Length: 491
Image (cartoon, rainbow, N blue to C red; front, top):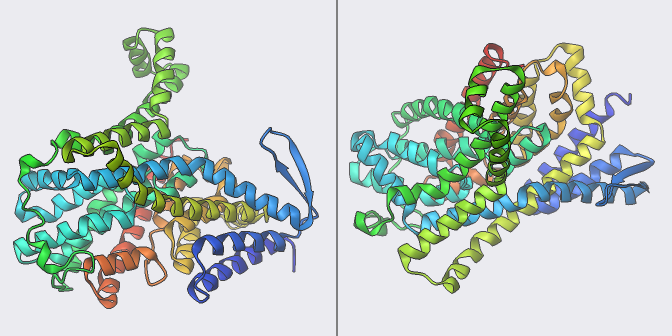
């Protein structure tokens, strides 16, 4: 076979390997991805491998030893980028749930929107809360609240549960510190603040239109509130009975989630001011003047870059969340340590799987898949924003995981992001990959089972509601991103 097409063969065989090993052989995703990375490396058939060492030197490895070194290097590089954010996000999620902060946020949104617009209240509160909280955990947290609202109003359970799914799925694919977005941001060399500003803004638009689809589905599919294995139906009635004054204040409830986002986004403001100063933009000159001139601006920016670093910002959020939990529930350090164990164990599994996905991405890059796709796109005039969505969509449907789909797609598309042929800011490619990775959640996706089991819906009901909803979100996201990339390319 022509060497020009061999990278596509490597990609296809590797994806088939992942699908079979996870779906048929029931291998854990970590083992499946590591073995797929080794498999792709062997198929690449390089005589020697140049591996960058910890001290920056390059060491030459030959044959199968080189494949192993390449895979472990890809694993380690990804773990370096994602481990701390994922672990800290897990702690924030646990503390926000256990302290009653999540319940407080939902109640406040209900007070603003009113019970007649309870679905919008649940959508907005979930969108806010889910920014640092993993999708499965968010479903675990919010599904009982959706059930309680449905029992209180006597209707609209499909609408309420889909409100949670719409918001949680969008932030899962659009915002750091979720593992997929972290990896894509690193691959495409986008600043975290830049990705957050655009991811949250466009994500909010997609969530709005996606929720209109939820209303349409709610009118066509009727699902009763049955409870779930974790929350029996008889215990739901007392779920929201805790007096409001026994919950944390609204400000302290949202601080662990909102403050890290603001700190990370602030670095983008200073970055834009720096670039605006070089081009003579008036607003940048005024902003630097407010900071006290160039010297003071540089000093302030150094501190902003420190506290706005994703790891430090999430450390601050985790500290506040744990402090609120300790104060609200009157817990000592020993109890806080005990409560931190399970979420950190869950985070460890996610870190291993995500890092294994990074190793698989490194193997695909070494196989030349990215360059082959680039050549194909140039030869056929393919739009790279559409192509990024398509690659992520195919990988998602094939193997189920949105995170793996984002890791794989970003590894393939990254070589093109820096080139002029992209025709727009790489943040559009970031978003198109994220929305492609949402497409068609079904039985090979852990999120599908989380929604089904925690909501009390049958598999058929989940397919008719959640699967349709998540596919609509993906298509709406593609339409919004593609339109924006044409109207405001920012290049």
